[in-house]
Image 1: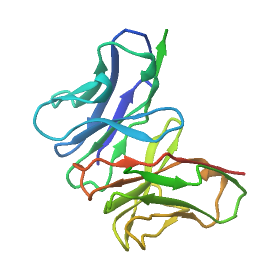
Image 2: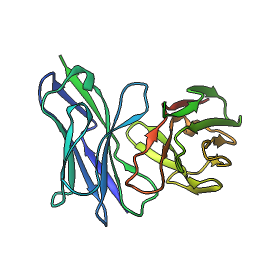
Image 3: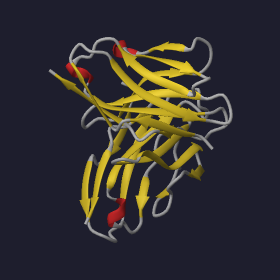
Length: 113
Length: 114
């Protein structure tokens, strides 16, 4: 069975500061990893994904994430936060045999002016 | 425009009154699924479908039914809704089964059962 743990249900950063959202996973086989963003009153939108190859993955809106197998982590970062980044962020994991995604509980990102 | 649509977006109903939430995608995707989102619990899969006439239970299927008579549509049916089914529901689709394929999400349906 696979699982995802997102550390911190709420994360607050100042505008212009580094954004770091943490995600750890467990999977019995090499995982596929995803970050989704949910803006208020909207559905989920894919930010980025890791399947194979380069462990540093770049996504939309300046976000990136690094797959670290030894740490079973897939943390999401952005060098400089913008007010428009305020949203709920979900990390998700799947494997090659899974029938769907397993989501973390989500992290609400708050941007302070 | 490629999209997943859900209707209604908001619904308030009473316990026991049957309801259907529709989901439709225009991307010719084979795989469709339903999730519910609850505070502190993230998204949990209710049912999924790998193709027409093929449906399977997800993690929290109790109290729900689905059907897949056409490739584009995947309605979620609550035969006898209860207050614990008050939630935000998302339909999603992807090209095929498999983790490699990105899932596209609908805008969500907020259901309140009184």
